[in-house]
Length: 77
Ligand code: SF4
Ligand code: SF4
Image (tube, rainbow, N blue to C red):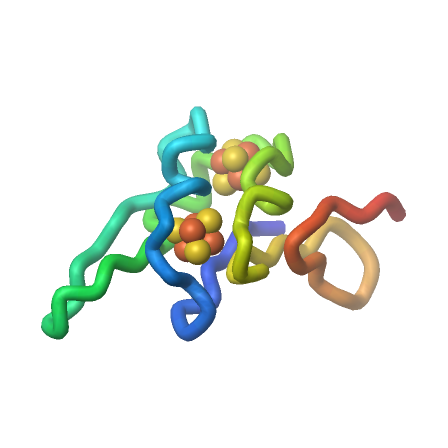
């Protein structure tokens, strides 16, 4: 399991970075001066799932269990 950021979907609002208490995310500035977040330290993730519902653009994904990923919200199972 690991959290990932879909680069094309991320708008750089930094909500996930601010909410994560484990230091998983880092902000990056591209050559065209756009801010985006990357999951730079996925090994730090404690799977609290706080970040997933915070992303307004469903850019965060985490596979919890089973065959499919979870986008934007936690899923039991
Ligand atoms: S699930 Fe929790 S620990 Fe993992 S990246 Fe999101 S906020 Fe951070
Ligand atoms: S909450 Fe979503 S849009 Fe905002 S920085 Fe994180 S991944 Fe990007």
